[in-house]
Length: 348
Image (cartoon, rainbow, N blue to C red; front, side):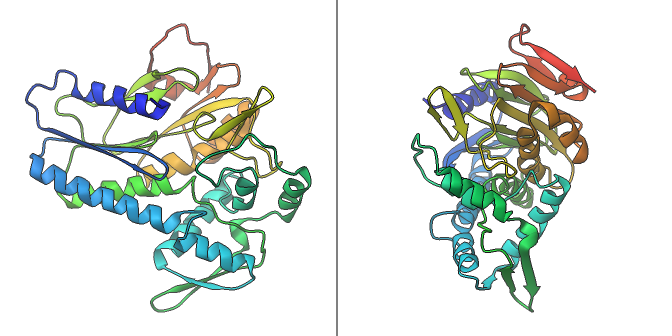
């Protein structure tokens, strides 16, 4: 059983504990390269099932549209950019690129969906990862090319958009954006379907709607090196958590772990950080739970607090390479650690 599977099983146990005859519906699937769960409380099974089907269809649509290396609207755009051509895209994709560009600027470029070339060079645009280091000269050349979303030009027409790039090194990978976007879309669909209490989990990015009856939704934060949760928190209506970790997409070589979270400044995977978890609320909470965890991870132990400040995050934690949990005082107030002996350093 994978770490994500164990987390899903734990989450299910938490949700179902002492549920009696309370109306509860849950469905799982595999999309975006990870396990997704939709849990609904307080609706009859027919209504809950129909709403969940609509959400799963939306997840699959987004997966098919945004896949970075298999045939998709995004991969077709990447091919055009590499050839120096402009490409007509859907208004939805154009809006995503504009929004992601704003997030990238806010993060000081640490969140950079234009570095798909580096991700591919490291072998992470694949279903299986080989423990092989890339050519250092190729990595250096991609870093020197400085691909950024600001290289894109998006022209608007009546019913469609045209995207071009002044930099052919731009290769788009929205893997750090798509899950959060999908969370927000799922929440909107559930509300449209008359669902007011639900928990949506996309591989560790989790959003809550309403509550689980008289109790809040309970969510576990995965321990990056052991099965089971590091901590538990109550997730309130409209809140979302997002986790970026080195334990999902990685390979080990010569005693060192190389994960898919790459620092665009160096071209190399971030070292000495095991995981980052953030808690957000308000408009676009799902999207922020996904995109805003990456800058903190890349900034590392020395820079994560400043990175959080830059993107207005108050509740966040980082687990360093030695397993020490660095967290804000606001985040500590929301957590119950499963092991009180967990080493912690609280910052303001």
